[in-house]
Image (cartoon, rainbow, N blue to C red; front, side, top):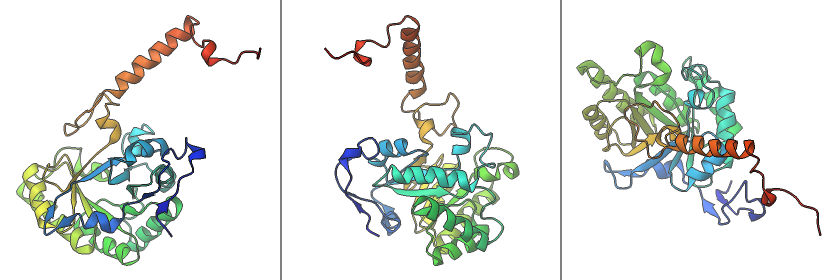
Length: 290
């Protein structure tokens, strides 16, 4: 199937870019790291809707349909209740809204841990239902066999080590990982195991910086940091966090804008104009033809 698209300018709302574009591939992301060096860091953000994907696509290498949508979109307390169907539906929207980035979709809690066969069934469903290019799963050495199993059957896998939100009930919270020698050693060994199993990239989340750097140097595939280090091979943030949509965010988030404030101000102006009947004006209504 060709990855070059000629977009129909007649449907500008759905497909606003009138030029053909070639989507990045998983091998292209993997090859960013050569001889332990990534000259062009990988840019990754989360996306959950088609319109959001359209706005982010040009600037990103990877769009992650994260199970963080459980909290960001659905208002859940954690990612644990997120379902395969939720992930598939949002991933399909992001694929439809993008033409440049590699789309990676999170495998939700309970969809892959029981066995490598269960993981294949879930991953195959996600990719077939959405058109995404790869899946992401949490866990280190314990998931290495599963990563290899999926990779050997044509499903590219992004790994995830350090703070793994799906395991929040075991970890006891969202604190930084790698502060003890034993935990630091485990994180590095987990990254090595995933790399050897064939993961094309590994997210390192919420890990003290020296350990994130050590893990990055220990693997041949790119690492993508979130609350880790600028020396990782790329970075990811939850888009809504970096845009300032929420008042409370993790300490590793840089808020690049106050979108929540802009929305609140704009809606307040709209409400005032409705109440004083200054909206709509003649410009926003249909008048009889002369």
